[in-house]
Image (cartoon, rainbow, N blue to C red):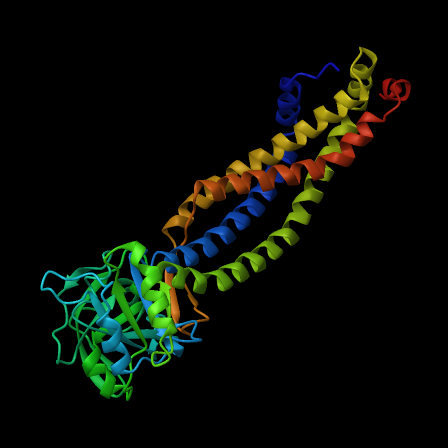
Length: 388
């Protein structure tokens, strides 16, 4: 089957500049929304997944899916920290820490309020999180009313800059530092001395124990021993898997809602492509008849119109991808279902998302061009040649 040259389709798109531009812009908007949705869900998921480390294990109470709902007593925490599989710090002590997690309502700089995770940490907490480093100020001193805040908290909430006084649980705390956690969930937290936080927040127990494994192969033995001990009543998770599981549900919901909105918008874009291609076919009836008369089959005409519609859609998709690139600089926040607090994160625009946007745009072009292409392919040659 002889194929109609591609240059023929490109020339036709150039001849209808206004309708081509409007249809391409409509498809570009849909592609942008599609990529925006993926970037939103992907940014949230990346922030939580990057929070955990494959080298760490986290221990929570049996049945708890999040730190906030867990209870770890001092006796259990001490027993966990004595396990032989735990790596040793330079001082020879176990590289492990028991932590407190609460949420507290704070005012944003925008004037609204929302919950923020307040974490009580110990001397080994920073060492267990390689991505955390001070961006400004200094670390809090144990035993004093001092806190450090994640960079997203400093950017988005009132009284969270170095030197400010922050009220938590009816007590004033000096903000002495801002830490950068590399885009992980810790950037949305406030840290202070766990032993001081426990009486202040009226919490006599910890929420979790985080530890560094001496070797990744030790995880199975540690998990089996702790979970089989009825006195413990704990569950042992790899830290990266623990946070990835928390991200899955909300990320899936964000994608589903976004794709639903995108599909509704896509209907409008597809109708735009239909109108454009029907108008194109109507204006080229005699031309299409000539193509048929000189030997091109109906299948060749159908394929040519589909290619033209797809090229138009891919043009819109490319524009949508270009418009989506600046999204990488956007920061937003959403409520985490597991901690009932705000998790701030940056949108994640990946090459895979851009490719998905182009594929989605191409699919719209195929759907929008199919019926006009079928009409052109089935057009009687004699009648088409008689058109003025």
